[in-house]
Image: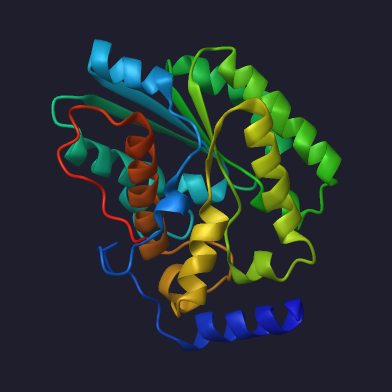
Length: 256
């Protein structure tokens, strides 16, 4: 079944034209349930109220770095800033892109302290899991690295949000990709941190009839312009729904 899904996905990505449209409201969507981080992000709320600023460090690998986007400005961290700027007038928003292509949990844990402390982060978004799943890291080891990274980051004071795997052909073909998503959800709950459900959000796009070519590049792994922009937009909505700042000018749109 997984092999058939991979072949179908590869055909869809190859045959259909690449789509690089804007992340418009009609196509960029997620349910309220999937946008719920499960954490109020109290530190971010305080930073908005007291300092009139929000400093976000986006940790991760190639999808954070922006691989697959036609312009670095379309990478999801840059789009996160665009959307936060729009919805938080009067707030000094900084989003620092600390994505390094090819890295997984092991390597990102090693640089967690330096990257978070350098930018005095108030929120850390840690995109992780895809490379660990593809490399077949044992689930116990993966969970231990998640705990270690969260502990290192939170010791420096910021709120923490895990961003889970991508729902793309190269991941869907794995025999146990959902186990990695399950482990991330369990660790997030155990450590009382936020979870941005990228895997489930993208799966909902696909199940609703959006072809892979709409949001994935021809390699079957990385997000294209639409995918990057939409993830940035939806992440901004998740953060603001958790923080609920008084500065919020527009209620983020979701579907029920």
